Length: 192
Image 1: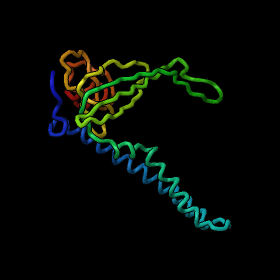
Image 2: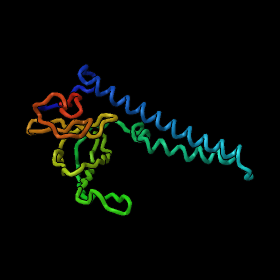
Image 3: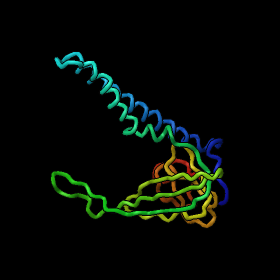
Image 4: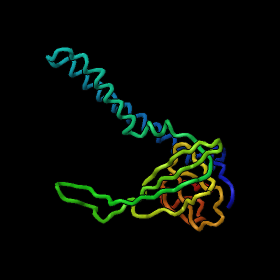
């Protein structure tokens, strides 16, 4: 399999494009709700407290509420741009994933691999993609691979998949057999 999929025009990829649009709408709604809650707190504070200059609570809470754009992921979805180029460097770091609950460490044996992929675009600019994988180190991408990133999807599609036995689902980041047409985990059409 050599060449990129027809993601933008193919009717079989319409559910994937709809999934990306739903993610953007959901993140926008979460951001708006976050902002509304903090503005409500600001209005309540300014009208129900006896502090001087209580009106400052409204812009202060509005500014704090803008953090919902980052928390919901809307900022990364809006700034994500399609990209095509060649991988020039891959860095993988592994760290222990530890969580503390009530003073006790849980999941102490779980490893998280962070993958940093540097892609040189056709115009010469370099773009960094970062993602985390639980437990499984990633060896799907190699330096020199031609790749294409689609807005709103987690990773990118390789142009030459002819030597691969497995590929990555762009939606849920699962390893899937190259013989599959749809991801057995999330059920979306695979980019191939």
